[in-house]
Amino acid sequence: MPDSSFDFCIVGAGPSGLTAAYQLLKSGCSVVLIERQGRVGGLAKSYDYGGQIFDTGPKRFHTDDPIVLDFIQEITKGHITKIGRSTKVYFLGNYFEWPLQSKDLLKMPLGVSLKCALDLLKERPITDKSSFHQYINSKYGETLYSVFFKPYTQKFLRWDTEDIHSDWASTGINRTVIDKRIKANSLFDLFKALLLPAKVETEFLYPTEGGFGGFYEQLLGLCRDYPGFRLILSDTIVRLSDDGKQFEAQTGAGERLTFTDLIWTGNLNALSGIVATQHTHVHYLNTIFYNLICRQQGVASRQTAQWIYVSRGDSLISRLTCMKEFAPYTCGEGHYNIIAELTDSQANPVYFRDPDRHIDGILNELVKMRFLKHRKHVESVHVVPVEDTYPIYHRGYNKDFGSAAAGIKKFSKRIHLLGRCGAFWYNNSDHSIRFAIEMAGQLLGRQRREFDYRAYFGGSYPAVGGPSPGNAGQGA
Ligand SMILES: Cc1cc2nc3c(=O)[nH]c(=O)nc-3n(C[C@H](O)[C@H](O)[C@H](O)COP(=O)(O)OP(=O)(O)OC[C@H]3O[C@@H](n4cnc5c(N)ncnc54)[C@H](O)[C@@H]3O)c2cc1C
Image (cartoon, rainbow, N blue to C red; front, side, top):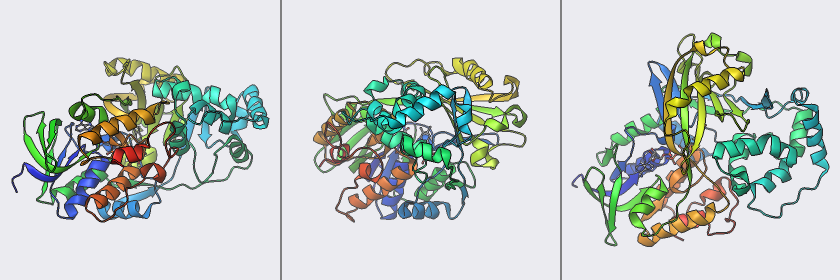
């Protein structure tokens, strides 16, 4: 077979693209994997600055899915370790453990605690199932909505919270902030947890070398063992035609490729721009990761945790990550390295155009939050701007995604939308892995039923006010 003709072309070499490639290669298929960046891993890349390792997005696997766990074991051959969990929120000028503990009651202004307690007594009906505001209000009450969820979400998504879909809360907040084993799923549960704190031992998995991204480097290594594999980096597809049996594609560098099926895990607008004459735009968020190499003595150890969510609406930082809390080996001796995340709108960027300009602001905030004792303890700052970090679930997102996916399917039914960007699914990397395994199985004819990825985790399903993204994405 000439090396320009393949069974499958996969666009995007993140967790889902790499997993799909590996599964298809193992079954004897040929695969060309095209990635617009110079390295594989997608959001799950790690950066190594002379032995100081920083992850980008994912910092741990959190799954009890046996199919995903087997896959992780197969790739790492046991080079993965269990780690615990620690999350804090920086809220009303204080650090709180999350889930909240009873001692935190004393740290909250009395008025806020009382208002939260009164919220418990109020009926909070949902009249609009798509409303983020109503969803949060019904579960946590108006006080927590206005002092915590609203400012955090508005700052984070750079979008009016009144136009945010409840799916953002059901897929996002429930997963990232609230531990499912504690079931702090409502204000009532929160108060119960507050008064009767139960110690929860959640376990995550983290690779024993190379940071979280080490996993995907290993996966790439395994793909390379197959002669039918080809990786094209720093390029993408710019033209595509379909004769009903085969696609012919042209890359930005001018290379021509032919293949039978296309799996798209990348930015959906880029694909729509190639295949659909008129297309609906879907919205993603960008994030700048400020990777700070810090001296251990400069960090206030009482404030640290794996993740610290910063709820203040006017702060640059939305979340801090302490790499050492995930894996001590990621930080060199005497160092305690931190990642500060700053999200930015893709439609109206404020920070992304010149990310270095905001280093000062980030460092000042860290001092003001009493997280850093002094700026002088930061040895160096590495700035990593990343596009398409989150799909934005605004009120009309289902309709927009359904319409974009329908336009793509109209062009060809042999285009398969996969992963966080491709299927527009606010997910974790383990979800992308599972979805890729299922899709590969389906394309290989091993299973007939489509994988219902929205039902697998999160989101209200079937979709409110539009075609189901899962079905639209898979052409049903
Ligand atoms: C801040 C943050 C923290 C997170 N924490 C966790 C965590 O702790 N645990 C966890 O499991 N998950 C976590 N996630 C989620 C995780 O990153 C995603 O679920 C996972 O990366 C999705 O994999 P994917 O392959 O579907 O998409 P991506 O990782 O987004 O990969 C898509 C790839 O496609 C490429 N691409 C896009 N468009 C094109 C194009 N037109 N042409 C060519 N290539 C293209 C991109 O460059 C990228 O490499 C986190 C995410 C973020 C942003």
